[in-house]
Length: 441
Ligand SMILES: [Fe+2]
Image (cartoon, rainbow, N blue to C red; front, side, top):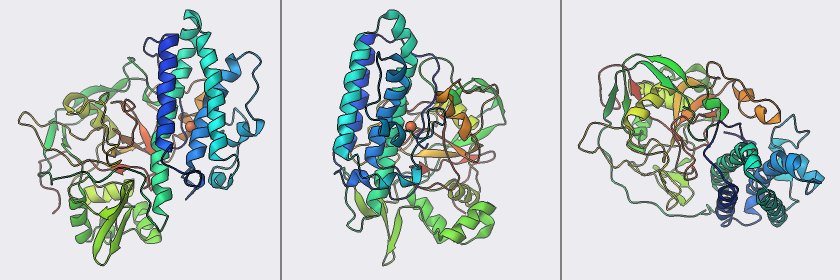
């Protein structure tokens, strides 16, 4: 999910008042996330995939300015012509833009000036929303709601990006939170799913991005899905068994990355005197074997599954099983802000096995390439650039993570990253088409 926004399906009933209230809520949340960060923190770009915090704050503002104020504000003029250029992410249809990999070089405007930009656009958006009547609410609500979800996507990216920025500081600064108490979960259980001809994709109720449409049929052989995520303890077993040294476990491109980049553990793990430590937003701590393994690439997820004698689920398998058997509610608030990190699995309840940790811990790699669903058509205009043009060379992740904004996760949500990406908060849920067995062998 890199600097993305996209087009929406029909939405809930909005009024001018509810749009204005939700606008304030979403915009304030971004500022709360940025508040612990100094202007210097907010300027650093630690690698090309990472954007500075202040860039996220400005870009989501640019989105409202470009797609709402420009077409609908009387006598519109940009807040600054240069911002139009600096804070366009990738919209060719809007005009030229600054190189993504060099966003960290933009020391001016500073974080405080970005704050002034936000305040200006907020004021003008408030005026626009105040003028809406019933007819214009219906006309503008889908784009305004898209702006809300776009900003929430960047809230998650802001956190994933600052995690990387802080990881490169030898003083190991803390963003916030503290470790959560945990106890080791039991062995993975398996949720049996009959399969057959099923339907996946957004059903038309509430918000969805265009890539979740259209809802369509998919045929699934009988399968089973793990009831929890793979843990750090299981990942340590994989490592101890030569997981990063056995070419037979790896896809060819993955093995090449192991060799060229020296992978021997998840992205944020460091070995000190024989002990593995993990960098988190609440500091650097010994690896907790009870917590979900995270910050692994698709290649690592696939190699782990091969080692375990299992496989990754397809996105249709994930969605169908979670629709039938989820223990979590995606609309519920899975607030992980006490630790800004995935939590340990709490274990199975007494009733039939259910899919736990679906939405609030780690995005889960699937074996599905990120492609358009049958009948997918991007919307017209610049806003249609958002999803369709990225449908090449990326893999789908499902669920949500500990950094996903409350209310943003959704059953049909399709996240996507290149298979070698590791800085996203990605983890592993196994699938199996045969008899159950223990993880590891
Ligand atoms: Fe964006």
